[in-house]
Image (cartoon, rainbow, N blue to C red; front, side):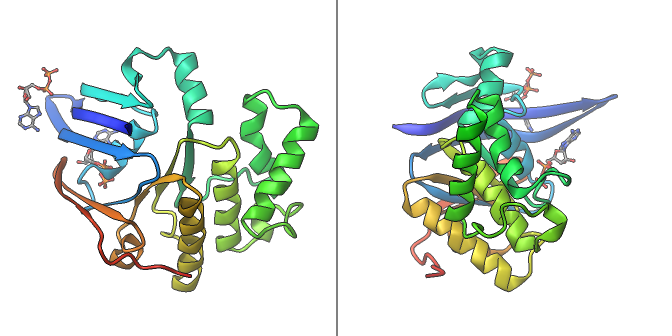
Amino acid sequence: QALISITDIGRKYVIGTETIHALKSVSLQINKGEFVALMGPSGSGKSTLMNILGCLDTPTRGEYYLNNIRVSEMSEDDLADVRNKEIGFVFQTFNLLPRSTSLDNVALPLVYSGVNKTNRLARAQEALENVGLGNRVHHKPNELSGGQRQRVAVARALINNPSIILADEPTGNLDTKTSVEIMGLLEEIHSKGNTIVLVTHEEDIAQHAHRIVRMRDGLIENDYRNDNVKSVS
Ligand code: ADP
Ligand code: ADP
């Protein structure tokens, strides 16, 4: 059963007299446990698609079912809940709160989930240990390297045990060695049964995924199983 099922979705922007079809017609099914890389030139619609998958944006046509629930029928409250609990976001620029420690950054989604403080801190501590940052819990983002910041962001993305991790260019701001380390971490997370969709420009990075979807001009150009998965370990 598909975790994500989108059928013939479109997303257009109307600006004055101009209409931009960011997504023309995209259909895609992603099953639980898949590791998908989304590639394509700048402007091909990758971010638009990721925003829709993450329930941050709504298609102007077509249907999106997440866990068999029709996203267009969800209330704003349901959507906020889905974004917090079902989806783990990882961004190129980390998006951490600069004045908060690693522990507080990772614990934050649990505030919205109504978890009490003692449990929040215990779970954030464990999540940071799981990404190899047990010794950096009281550091703030500017006291961490880029790779460490991204590990904090990954720990935060995982804290509510989401159904899916959406990672938009997670290695875009990292050097090659650190990028490989982050891909190793994503592989480990995938091996535990997590579903991952990763946007990347880098062919080397995409080769870590088990399925590669290429977009062009708001359409899926091709979608295939990667028979030569590159592994860090
Ligand atoms: P709406 O009916 O709300 O204006 P659309 O503009 O998405 O919705 O679709 C209007 C028609 O144009 C539909 O028949 C659709 O299949 C077609 N269409 C939508 N996007 C494109 C596109 N990028 N290129 C060509 N045809 C499109
Ligand atoms: P990618 O992530 O592949 O670079 P995007 O999804 O960001 O592509 O953009 C796809 C197309 O939609 C581009 O032509 C872009 O200019 C347009 N677009 C994206 N967001 C907006 C927006 N908020 N308003 C108008 N056009 C947009």
